[in-house]
Amino acid sequence: MSLQTIRPNADNGVSLSVVPSGSHYAAIDEASLDTGDYVYVYNSGLSGISGTDRFNFPDQSLAGAISQVAIKAVAKFTYDYSGAGYNKVFNGGGTMTLYQKVRANEVSQGFTLTTSNATYTFSRTLNPAGSAWTWADINDLIGGIYLYCNATCSIPPKQTAGGGSMAYQMWVEITYTEGWANIAKVNGVSQADIDKLFGINKLSIAKINGVAV
Image (cartoon, rainbow, N blue to C red; front, side, top):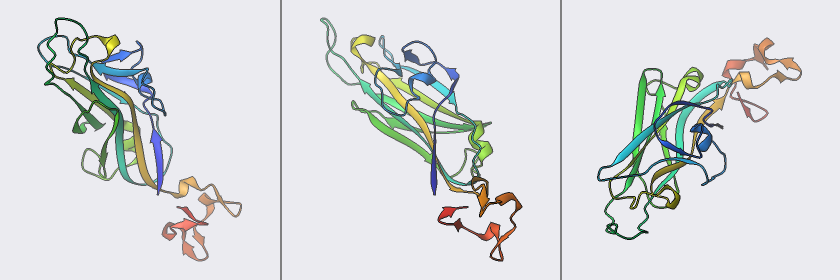
């Protein structure tokens, strides 16, 4: 099995807030956790607040059978009771939903956030239409983050003091078995020109020198 990791490279409809200002995908596309940029919602009154960001990913040119696709995100919620005259009874919280969308089909999974950064995973062995994943599906994949913060999880609502629900990273992990397209040559011969190895049809061979095909 092999693992391919892809990260957002473009926005595809955004309604969350972002720090710093600019493209939302750029706030969550880093390989290492950076809490200095993120997408978020924070409450500013007596009702909850929510928003959703959706992202595109770079096209892939790999081959092989895909066994699982997982969208992962690092997120948390925070609250701040500093400042005079604010209700200091905490009874709120934040949630996050992760989406996988391929063409007209979309699936999702919800999570309850904690006050510490944690990694949340939404994985599927089938695409959103219920069929086996293909690389065409991966190239059409849209990933989404929905964040919600209820009315009392951020008191007072000060961005500089933290507060609300926020996501710092999002990425996709594709688990797959490598295909022949990933082997250029065998003993100097282009794999495209090979029908058999040692009398065995190449499509019946699982590995060459330990490399899955």
